[in-house]
View 1 (tube, one colour):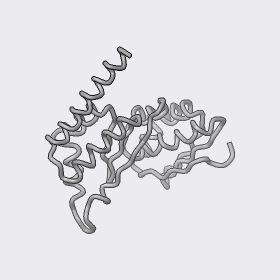
View 2: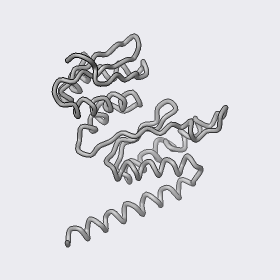
View 3: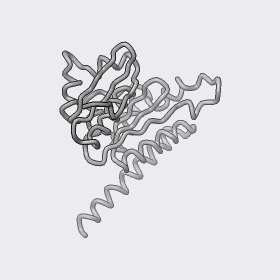
Length: 184
């Protein structure tokens, strides 16, 4: 373990989440990724030190990014699963300069009592975190695309009902594909 293979700066309020109670989250991530983590609690920098596997070390960088974007360590470590990926959408790219719409956009994605986020997670099969000026998604290739499209629809002003119908249609099509595949 010499030079870090990744250095990720995360918000200071997320450092305790990376560390976990008595260092439990840090230790778990180090074991899962077969890496060493150096956490600077004064700057928010987290260095990933590769031990053997470069791919696991790179994935660990995404795990740290995911925690920095508001995911729990349990959800972030699902990135170690096969075909799992992290996507981050900046809400600033949907807001006009000087606009105060970011709060409104976050509200559209979360929904009343978290309903919209839950519907998207359930129907797309992905995890969603709304944190700061970003929306982050963890999922496989298909669920990531589906959830991203649903979120972009909401950010572009589509009605919730339209987005729900889109997601339900995709879910039905997936179900029929799976049934057809089982007969092939």
